[in-house]
Length: 170
Ligand code: SF4
Image (cartoon, rainbow, N blue to C red; front, side, top):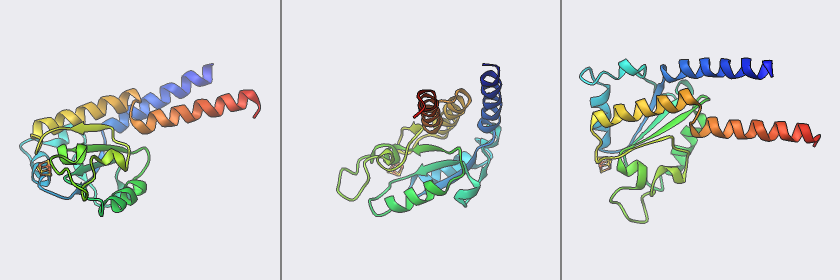
């Protein structure tokens, strides 16, 4: 019991640090990229949220922002880059194209990146306003702090299953 409480507190502390130190990998494919640049520029000052350093290597990033339309041909590359991100990793779908395929209802466009990778936060808009993007980052910070991102919840489920298997002696 005592060890469990200590582990939980350590996890909370780690999550507190993580939510204020996102290293963003911008996967930019289309016009939403202009809005990403705007958010990263001094006027909106993404640095206030501890997310000011875009990294162009997935191994040095933990937050992937998928910015723009993803075609079926780009999907394998998106998955490969996601797999290479450092753990624990988070994903934001930036704009309606990344979130749902947008107005491209055709065979060549992926109808939402959650068909390929897990998504933590969806930002609507075509393109989203910078304020919406900041809202999305704040929401992600909240989820990370509370341990409610897709991968954090999956890891907790796996740990519980392991514990149950151990207690059953399987
Ligand atoms: S959501 Fe709109 S602005 Fe963003 S990539 Fe799609 S079409 Fe372009």
